[in-house]
Amino acid sequence: MTHPEPTRETDSGQALALLAGRPLVALTGAGLSTDSGIPDYRGPNAPARMPMTYGEFVSGPTAQQRYWARSALGWSRMKVAEPNAGHRALAAIDPELLITQNVDGLHEAAGSRNVVALHGRISQVVCLSCGTISQRADLQRRLEELNPGWAERHAEVTVRPDGDVDLEDTDGFVVPACEVCGGVLKPDVVFFGENVPRQRVERCMAAVDALAEQDGALLVAGSSLTVMSGLRFVRRAAKAGTPVVIVNRGVTRGDPLATYRVDTGTSEFLTALARRRAQTDEETGSQVLSM
Image 1 (cartoon, one colour):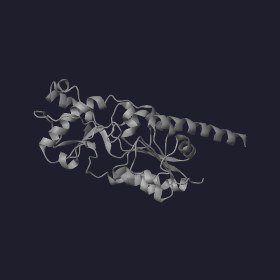
Image 2 (cartoon, rainbow, N blue to C red):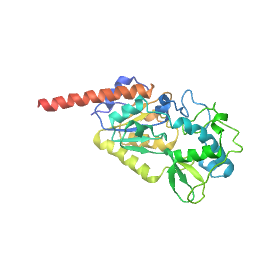
Image 3 (cartoon, rainbow, N blue to C red):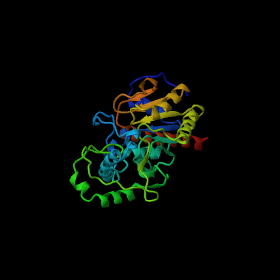
Image 4 (cartoon, one colour):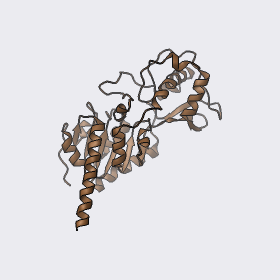
């Protein structure tokens, strides 16, 4: 197939035609989950505040108290979020690899199979001392038992994409320790300032590199690509001559590298893409049968 010349903006039709019959690797960001009621970090309606960094979290008990006091409120809403049309469409598309920067687990809930949760999953907790992995739902029960009435006293808060909330006064909140060794508990996600585990990055890079041999394409959906953890895959694909399609509300850091860049909702675009690819598969199958 011939690759179109790079362009900054296009309509959905051109991008859909490019992606219809190619092997795909998909890279998703927080913008994909906004239709599930989870706000993003940098979208048009996102509150201007960055999440806690790894350096802050490990600085001591005060920061850890602040994080878990907020997370105890945010989790109650995160855990009931359900996959939206975009998640379901990507599950139907079934790309060669689905790389998500989201920690909400909604891709897996929608039925996607080949998923790399680049930044981990908020549903799990890790002990920084002994490395024990436990379930966030179990920790939530402990948080509620140690802090009765906390949720009721702070019912009106704004939830963040990682389960954090906007809340300043966290004095008095009791944080439980690891039940195995008494160590500090941290959500098993990559905080800002932390490195993504090497094996995850290597698996994603290998899938992106394979696209060049497969005449495939990289699809970015709902990410501003502000941080390097996602942008590096766009750079890798573009350097290899692999078409890159970016679908996002608002500008992204990868726009200069995009073959097509579509400013539209991810649920709308992905639903159309799933339908278009299913139609292409049917037509290809009919042609094979008629030979």
